[in-house]
Image (cartoon, rainbow, N blue to C red; front, side, top):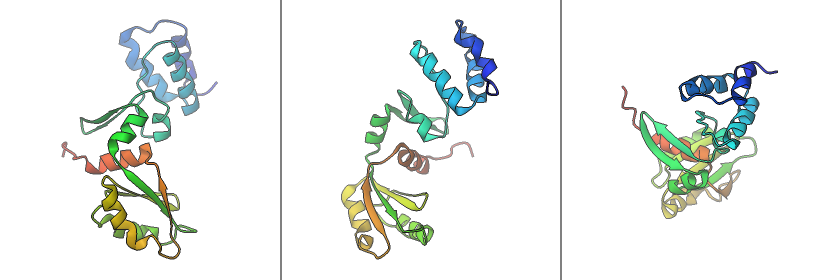
Length: 173
């Protein structure tokens, strides 16, 4: 048994009063991610709504619906597909053989009109924009640059999250 599993085992076999929802959520947060997935799927399969708060987009991708909230503002809500489509992002992955020079290149790209988001992903960068024609024009000078490999890719939840958070204003400072 993993640490924290005992806190939820009884709840799976009995009705949980609405007042205990916060205790159930706390218990879900205490157990290993694999256990949390299994318990969440079990509860959802029994017709219960499960609220998952996570900054791991691979966890969010398994949810029926997601919402991005920043500084108390609801930024977007819907299925994973709806959230990605609503971003209107066009995305390229650009890489080098070993990632060398990408940090400096990212800084350069981020200043160009038509590029709304540049984010590192391992040994590559995701370069996105909401206006496809403007993005194409912004990256055109570097598309045939030696040592760079450009691949058109579908935007991910991670891309959408990074883009939305970059546009969000911290209204608590």
